[in-house]
Amino acid sequence: AERAERLREAAAAEPAPGPGEAFAADPAVFVARTARLHGRVALAAGASVFFSCRLEAGLGPIVIGSNVNVQDNCALHTRADGLVIGHDTTLGHNVRAGDGRIGPHCLVGMGARLGPGTVVEADVLVAAGSATDPGQVLDSGWLWGGRPARKLARLDSERRAMMARTVASYAAYGRTFRRLQARSGGEG
Image (tube, rainbow, N blue to C red; front, side):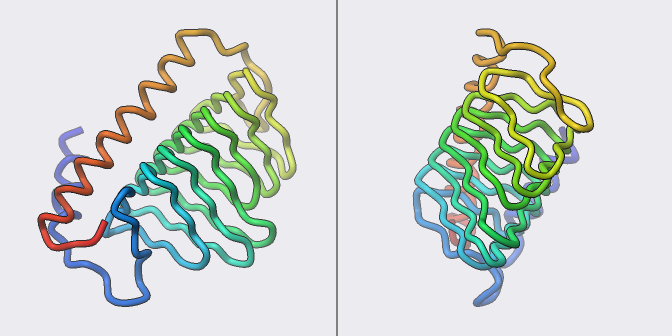
């Protein structure tokens, strides 16, 4: 935790990227200076893209809903239809995803890999380190895990509450970092 805080402080002190290097964020979103967004990327109000993320919208767009947080070191790359992420969703640190859909009220755990064409329905928890096969559909209301991901358990009220707390806490982090970054002369 201490190391992560030092990295965030160092990132906030970095100069803003030059023209064409970063996404020009709406004032209601947070995009860390160390994040790189290229191509057609749309971020709804309250969305956050944290440190060292790379969002590459190749042929298809990347559309990120309200109050979505894309945590440190995520890599999202589209090569065909694009990627749409529904509101109030969390992508944990080091998530990798390509073309597909992630519904609202989801949590994709740290280090998960979503294969091309994956559809994560609404209200899904994907366990850390899990991977999906290309085109796999993860049904709503379940905890999914493994390689390839499979249903592990129905989501209960405790898991849903944890998912909602995660969205709320990272939305607060995004607002705080946006203010700090703006004070230090950066955009976002």
